[in-house]
Image 1 (tube, helix red, strand yellow):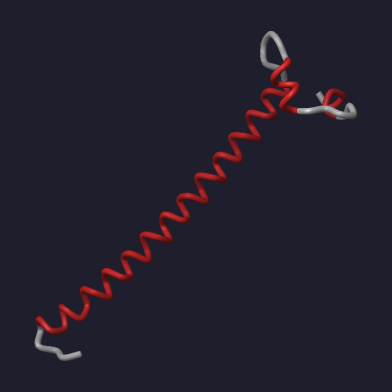
Image 2 (cartoon, rainbow, N blue to C red):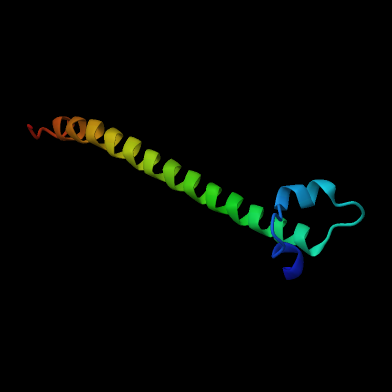
Length: 76
């Protein structure tokens, strides 16, 4: 595989498009790289979602706390 990739002008996309027959080692390598990128993308999306949910939870807690204090006779 290394000999193929080291050739001047080698293109992963051109290799995948023009390759006929069964998948090669290059296909496996590219598939693994794309899978890692997808995993990274999902981790970033999950991090954004968690951050957003934390912000909403803090906002809601801020709205709930004063109501609890008033309900128990405690003034702000």
